[in-house]
Amino acid sequence: MSEHGSVSRPRAVDPLPSASRSRTQDGPPRSSGSGLLRLVGGGVITGAADDDPSAIGTYASAGAKFGLGFLWIAPVLLPMMVVVVYVSAKLGQVYGKGLFAAMRDRYPRWVLYPTVLGAFTGNVIEAAANLGGIGAALNLLVPLPVPLIVTIAAAVILAFQIFGSYALLRRLFRWLALALFAYVAAAVMARPDPGEVLYRTFVPSLTLDGEALAMIVACIGTSLSAYIYTWQSNQEVEDEIGQGRHRLEQRKGATDGELRRTRREVIAGMLFSNLILYFIILSTGATLHPAGQTAIDSAAQAAASLEPLAGSGAKVLFALGVVGVGFLAVPVMTTGAAYDLVQGVGAKGSLHARPSEAKLFYGTIAAVTVVAVGLNFLGFNPMRALVWSGVVQGVSVPPLLFLMMLMTNDRRMMGDRVNGRLTNLLGWTTVAVTFAATAGLVATWIIA
Image (cartoon, rainbow, N blue to C red; front, side, top):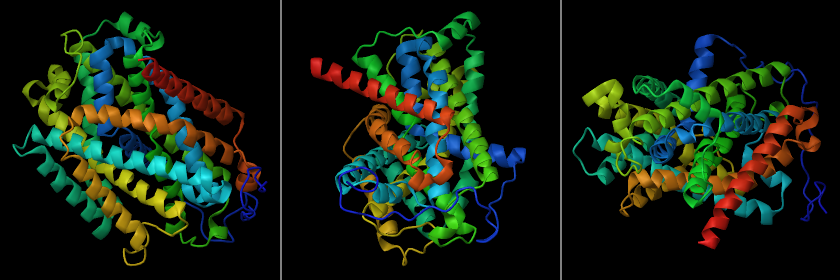
């Protein structure tokens, strides 16, 4: 038995100093400014990365297929979204390493490698689907073949990642994400019955057959995507490195103020994401579903739910929103895949390193981008691919979240910053719910 209670070769984990110690010895504290603009700006980025094109396609399909009867998924998902992003951020802050680097310390190889493979594969599929979504959205405005648009978009994103910076890409595209608020206005202008909206928000009205379970798993997968865990934990580490804490012993631990700031930003981001989730379902459920359009097979059909607001400009609004969140989210997915791989094999990789200093890391980003583009030449329907990528992510969520909850409750890794009662209640409930939904879906496949 290893020191962590699992069968493996002996492996030492660096002892954790007091997690609540002052930072004064190791450098300046992290900025804890809580101005409204900073909070909202950070929230928009986190939320927009979660409301990627896959999420937009999935939620729009849910509303079209099931109407207002699917609105309940939003309040159910909100606490789950908050807790999974918070514990992944806390892991990176307190332990000082990204998700899979921490897992390499904590778990035996027979647990680590399949988990890395699952998360890596999910990232590739999700990136491919999201690039396809960008291509389909831009095709509404630009009369070029979707694969060609995908190739151009991927080349621009990759160039920013290797020769520029994600921060620059974020500054350019984050305000395009505000186009997603068009779904709020469109839902209001569709004039659904307020009483029914309120009722359906809190009372599920679904038959749990294969189609409904697949959509539930897809919504879980696209809302709690594994790439968000990887990105969030590693961005905490990158933030520390940016503050000059290059050594692990400098990064370990977190002050009360740092954790409070993290909670505020996570809650703001997930509230934004969940609000958009809700109104996408409401707008499509109030417009497409009553008209008998229960399947979304094209970007034009998805954009039609914005017509009560924008009329003929609906396609422009839809394209702006998808491109904005797509250009924010795809780099998160490809970089997340790189983090997964290099940390899984014990190599180093950081966005603070130059490509010549982290060849495997940047090479993986490039390779994942190329593969993701290549998958779009196989002829899959891009809108359906967005939903099925969510299903793939949904299947990978439960085991990864289970392992993450174990780590954030391990005092040898987290010191006195282990999860509190509320975090554990929400976290373990999320594990149980996601396992149950996935098991139910698999059962319907077996029975069918």
